[in-house]
Image (tube, rainbow, N blue to C red; front, top):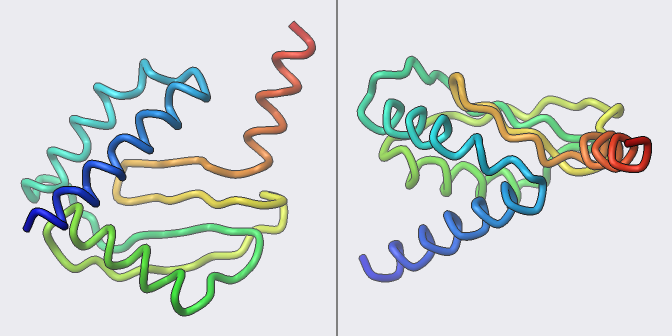
Length: 116
C-alpha cells in the first residue's frame, strides 16, 4: 500500500510540475474535478487513448495501462493511435480528460513565446 501511495505521489508531483512548466496551472482544478468524477464512476470512460508519433512497445503499453488502472481504480483498456504530426511525445485521453505531452505542442508554445 505504501509503495502504491509513493508511486501515486510521484505521478501527481510530476503532473503538477508539468502544468507549472507549461504555464497551465489554471487547469489543475478542472483536471482534479474530472479525475474525481472518473474515480467515482461518473464518467463514461470506456478506454484510454494514447496517441503517439510511433507505436508504443509492449512494456510501454503495460506501464501506462497499469498506471491508469491504479489511478482510476478500475480496468480501462488502452488503445494506441499513431499520428506522425506529433513529431514526438504523446497525448493521453481518458473520457473528457486530455493530456498533451507532445513535441508539437511544445514547439507551438515556444513559437508563441518567441513571437510575443
